Figure: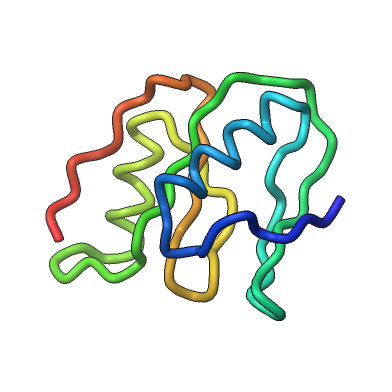
Length: 103
């Protein structure tokens, strides 16, 4: 299923909350498209309480691998990238802590 974005991509907290609500309704994020205001593609899934995290790709002192590994070590799974700027991660733990990454 494809849905238009209810908020701007840069409103990361609102976007994370929306993605979490979609997961609770049984829709798991698959990918984003930035064309025409943006849309998200979802696949059906078992409804779940989970947390989403959007983080900027640009980290001055961190390589891509270091950022990815920090999230993986803290129980986050990479989902996709938005507009080449934000990485999207999901955690099955709705209260998961985000890695401490210094920008």
